[in-house]
Image (cartoon, rainbow, N blue to C red; front, side, top):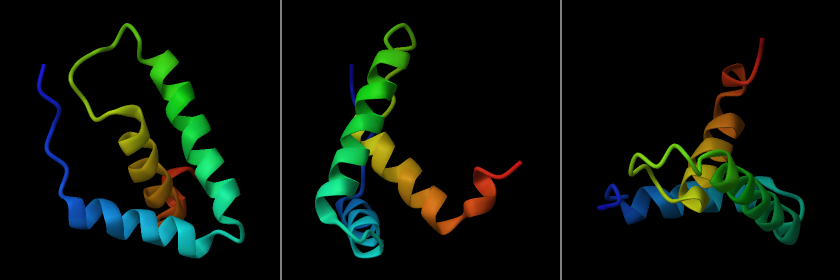
Length: 73
């Protein structure tokens, strides 16, 4: 099964945004890892070839940081 191609520059930009916005690099790293781990177990039966859990966690967290209305309501 092929994984979707992720543009490296976009991924690095999002990672840098997360790290720069965080007060503690270790804490944001642990938060990304925990979200990825949680998503991995949530999606065990839903294996449709999406991004790997850590990539999905990075994209989700950077989106939430940039667009807080996503998680509102």
